[in-house]
Length: 183
Length: 181
Image (cartoon, rainbow over the protein chains, first blue to last red):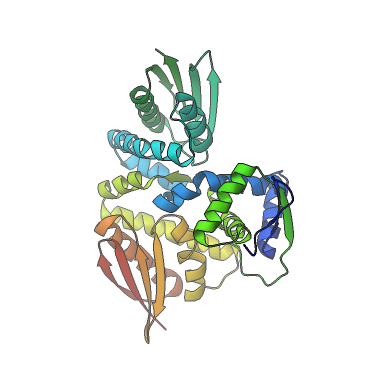
């Protein structure tokens, strides 16, 4: 198609970028300590990861201040129920969209590891694997103990419903730890 | 926010994996765009909006959860909240881009872009008649959300452009008729 970039090999492409966008991309990359190439790749990968879901579902973007307010105003049980319903809807769709097997490993690494921190439900995520499919997941966020409990309960229930695993959790003000052991 | 530019388009050469490029190609075809057109669209949206989302550590929540919040919280609380969110966002966009407050800039830099991308509504249209500008917002959250959107945007029109408006509310659509000065 006219306007398609030139593929010099399987992975090199040259794109013609609108002037100000190009300038802003370069400045933003510099600010983040990235090369322009790395930043553009990150943006394109994110688009491939989220674009279809975002187009179909139009999720809502809210600031941390507003989210904290909503979290405080709405009962914890309602939050948990709501998250469980959302996870039940989002998870199979994401797997299907990205052609992934619905395995425990994909759930941990892809849904939580890749997507979780990018959509802001936590800020940091670490995963230690101890043996075959035994995981220790640590999530750090800024929303206090209520959010730790909401995430810990909804994620635990999601794992237990989908896989033959035993889950133990530990929550504190801004951190939750989930240990998953295969039965 | 990126403004329209008439400058020559510089080239950027990137190295990307074949899987990502294949996916982008499929997307471009489905939208009737060239790859170059799609990548420009993606980069513009990112630099105009998702950079802000990332820098401010915003949360992106699924619509089902948002729908529950709308059901639970009182309408007046939500009108105050949404009015504040919109007003703060618009002031920030206009200040960062050194824009003057006009209906055209409001439409281009908020209603057609940030407001739409942030999920407050899913379709936006604008048309004008003799004495007024009609702004149409479609969403999927029901009549309560229509009332909230109508009042919040009406407040925005008054607060920023000093324009009065009337609105018609349908379950998933708001028609805001804003007076022309």
